[in-house]
Image (cartoon, rainbow, N blue to C red):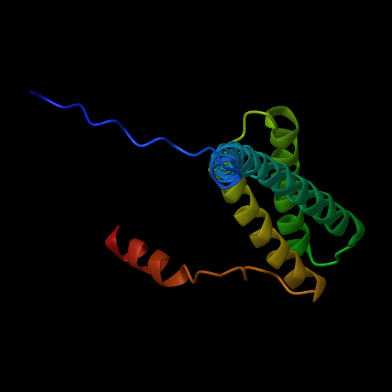
Length: 149
């Protein structure tokens, strides 16, 4: 009738044990590394935001000092300095109040604004007005208006 074939008897030797041990340890290592790397990356993003906020704070402080120390004799430069100093003060106050809720996009925008203020302050150090005042010659238009009446 039908004959049953007996399965081969497995030998239990040390090579099989080592292979199973290496397989399990490799699997555990992969699981550990995948969780560890995810934690490291999220922690790095956290510190990235903190570092950016610290740099913005330092830049704000240095701009405040630069704008405070300078004594400009030109009225136009003084007015520009006052305007930028007030903007820097508003930014500093905003950072102080909203440090925890500020987004990365807002950080980039604030950094861009502060960098532009820093460039402008370098122009003032050279005793130059950032934006020259333009004078309009209104006499031509006034004459035309007088002729129409």
